[in-house]
Length: 504
Picture 1 (tube, rainbow, N blue to C red):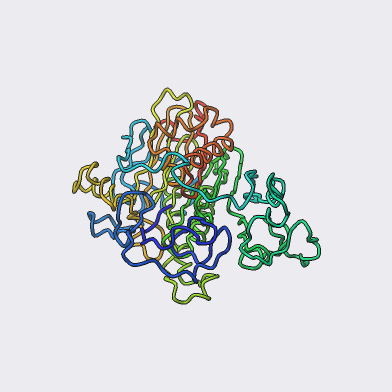
Picture 2 (tube, rainbow, N blue to C red):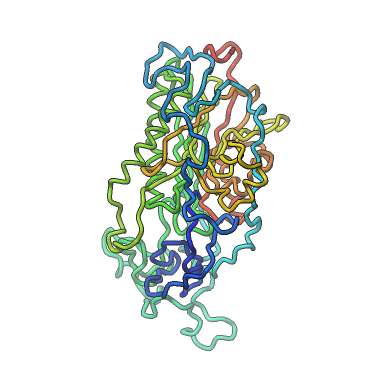
């Protein structure tokens, strides 16, 4: 998850030992009020999530440390004006420059340099993180309703052990000592019409803040685990194992071009956790970018221009959140607030072209179906280390050894220094799969070769299964972050079909 490193506060909940995040007001596991706990001394060291040592106060670094970029919003040379209708789909070969002022030639994915990072690795095994004793059962149901904690009674909790002499001593401790025993409470007696029943104790009513009034447990949110499959594209998003909410978002869709051929779209966004309301920022960006792409493609706008315009629209949607008050903050006027922010990456497959666009450190990878051709990373991070290397101020080893290496230098948000969408077009010469993901996945499969090994061989035929496997790969590796991935198969168009760019 993209973020500004902050000084650590409480590492774990004093009540249940659940790992906490900076700025938490209540424990996400047991609901413990953290405001009653004295703050830690100021001489504690700064903790950095990515394990690269002490960090600067702000990881969203101004562009004053890197060369000046071209003016934002400039359309690619040779591309039609935004929204201009086109008769048929006679798209020219992509030439000229993109909005960043760099050449944007049409080329094959395997021609790219791997862009591998030599930065510090994250813990590779779940055991590297000490997770608290589960407040919920081991059995987890992963569907659109997120993790199901309702099986707690079937796991043996609340029953006497072999050496127990009374039933009361066998019950697990509850944050609320006066909580009712779910085995003796009639759910119908405590649940008013339209109310929600706690999935942990099955006896308490869930309040408007999402916590059980009986046992104090936080309830799973709708976005904790989301899956969607739409024909030739699928996506999965998961809260991960360390965070109390999912701040990622995605959108997948398809459209018909003016000539009747299909176009498939995938957009993935990662909320900047050090910003206010990052979950709202990612949701607004993914939804608005998707709608913009569909409308432009159906009008016949070139996919690369459509992607550029969609990122601009997404930025405007996130900017609008800065002027809209967020819920849940009124009770704490002293809590620091800043502009909502997120990263974005999108991919469009249309008529033999593969177009990607991005801002931030979410990525897109190309994996050939036959695995005989080389996989490639199609995006370059907007990060401090990447900027230093590109500017020639440091070599790669020096840049990624710096504490600021993973600080992002580009994002969507009202406090972004400038809007500079990156777009690129590719013309693969073989079928393959595009993997679009947040850093919650690529932290565990950073290189293109690693991503190819993690992706199932039948990903093109079973994109949803492939996305599920990739999310599982991240969770098995530690799941320290929210994980979101979209899998978009690319098939070669039939010979003689398509538009002018197919023969370019």
